Image 1: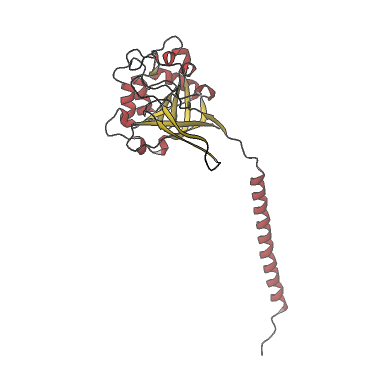
Image 2 (image 1 turned 180 degrees about the horizontal axis):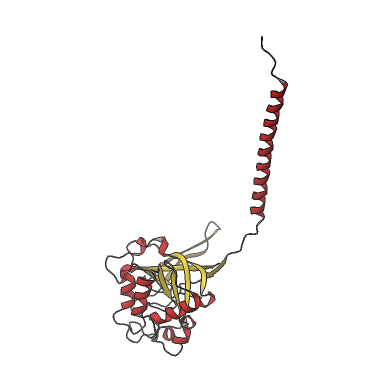
Length: 279
């Protein structure tokens, strides 16, 4: 014969079950409250700045390079009645807003399609040297300029992207003012600022930057004949962004750079779409 369980045991089990479900209900309510709070948070609008010049017939290229060309294949209504556009384009690697791969001036270093994304997407800083370049188009931005910047803004972070604001964008797309000459093939009369050799060594060896860029046609100043900055950056596998636009719209720091070149296999350079996201 099965005997009835004592009444006290039955009451205890009821209490345990009730306590268990109470905990589950409380946990569920807390979770729902958390989810509601998260989704109630307003989504912060992105503040993006385009740092890219458009590619067209006015795009500035190195004097010895082929310029940008676009052939319209079709632009208009088709026989079927729908709209259709297609073009053929032709361009040198190094012109307009573009990226220099390290291999551009350093044997055995990364070509365009080998550069890791970590070198192209990183926190950025802008070093404003317009006061130095205003009356000196051949100014070479040296280590001291970066040390001065650090005294005001703090140490340049490792693996960051360093951008030079020389003020040269104000001359775009006037080739003579921007380059110093508008003669095709004339690479002897170029005048614009660039990185000095000691600055390139400082950024690659002491600050371990991811990439560098500026608003002129070259990492080296216009009158350079040995392109020492290119060589140093290239040897350190540091890509360079040239002819960057809208740097005056960025703060000294507090933004992220996203620089994605056309992924040309074995390329020494490529057209670049570069933007900044201000925090």
